[in-house]
Length: 134
Image (cartoon, rainbow, N blue to C red):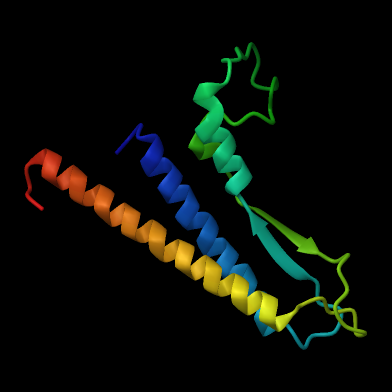
């Protein structure tokens, strides 16, 4: 599985989705806390950048500090967790909308389940290729 881009993307996607579920759960738990700013986790744009990298012209780095915003591998993808304080939902300055957060949690859960199924199928393919059967 080492060196397999698809496996790395699946792994990072599951990790990012787990962090998003955690942040959304914290948002729901703090929906009645005054001045609480909801948290968001994003990572899909970073994964897309890594996946699309082979179709772009290759860049040569002469120093580790050059092109620091270009991710060369899936290992460099880190889910970005940020606080969203500029959207005000209620008068007590809490910006958690319970319906939106519940929908986001359901969407994230479905994506997580889909990725774990894909991972299971990929493992089954590896087992079959190795000769361990299905």
